[in-house]
Length: 170
Image (tube, rainbow, N blue to C red):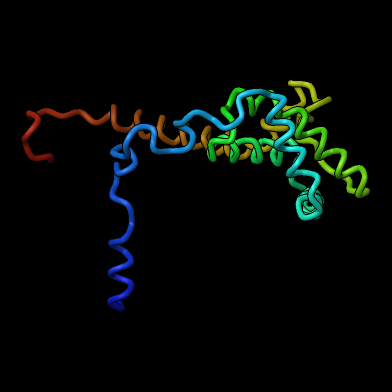
């Protein structure tokens, strides 16, 4: 092991160090810069109308990242940076999603909204049947193992011990 590797290993944070940081020293522990939904919408619109953002957003949507995930990531990072609080972020979330979908539509990108349920249209019985078919072999294996254990138990019950617990067997 190289000396540099050893010293970099000791540069890691100490477990529990995050609990010793002074209260209020993190951006999300302070008063946010934007306190209303209107201010937050203006903030996001100014950022989202730049060409750089539009290109990156379209690329991410083309990769298949759901719109809901992208919008939630944007608002959560702003919360962590102290731009607005979580309440304002949740109220702005539908506007962010609409703007991202508008970008995707204008670029001709087929995107996933992330709002559709993957089991939509499937009944509960069909889901249960699918699970039962998948694990049918495992269930049969468990039944065979249980039957073998029952046979062993009955064989052991037939053996009679005439001496005490610590005596030798004949």
